Length: 158
Image 1 (tube, rainbow, N blue to C red):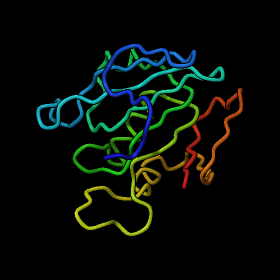
Image 2 (cartoon, one colour; image 1 turned 180 degrees about the horizontal axis):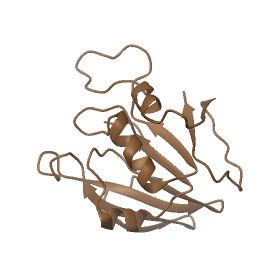
Image 3 (tube, rainbow, N blue to C red; image 1 turned 60 degrees about the vertical axis):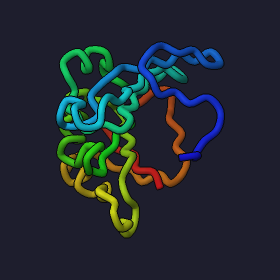
Image 4 (cartoon, rainbow, N blue to C red; image 1 turned 180 degrees about the vertical axis):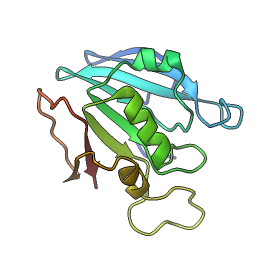
């Protein structure tokens, strides 16, 4: 789909773009070890003094090696909408508990009515699975302070 222009990173590897070093780690795309949809790329980078991890479109459990490579990110961007290629709410919550980030930004979920032929759902099952974790609804723009709380917070964007 033509949704962006410019340099698009897809494959695992180490990249340096405008002084930003981005590492892509290969991981299974699906719950069948990649046998159904192949491999995904998990991303890690440091920006503004914060460690970021973006798990891309994956529904696979993180391997011990994945957890070591990702470490404990300050900010975790994770798909939560379910379906064949994205974590469902409880799977995403388990990953959050494993990685213990300070900020979680859920992505890849449906806002409003679910379109026909879409296998993803809303962010609500993830928020329910993370009950007790503070949730902040931040709108379309999110600014992160250089110093984050030591506890996990979920920032839901619109």
